[in-house]
Length: 183
Image (cartoon, rainbow, N blue to C red; front, top):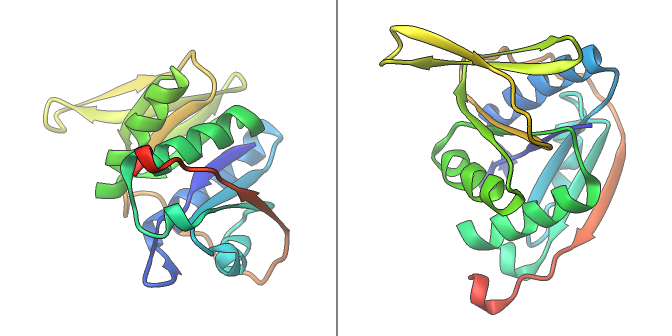
């Protein structure tokens, strides 16, 4: 499974996360697996239909009152716990301010590598290969991560947004225990 953290604002999934989910669905097809969405918050399961319509086969709703407002440590703890339990092949984030804050924290908790600000992702020989700009965009670096899960942030407005089609799938509610010290 390729899982995508879905960033929300004002009760809606952000477009940049839907772009990442659309790319995850395309990549999952090349790997013979499925794409899944991860929603985190106090009560986020109601947003699942928006993820299903852009290709998620399952939506994991990480719910806790402690996740009502974004806290980098609390969200990192919740997502790292999810990744340790579910073991997705890859975990993708939109390279927004929140995604750039959260992804490295999750990677550190999992002891995994992170490809940041990717502008292209391909499947080669059954592995994901990430491409990102270097030297202020004057050159591009392609890399494959050895760690599992593979974590990456995808640059917004680079990956095409898939067509929204009415679909249904499985909503898995995951109760998250976030200690006060993580807030």
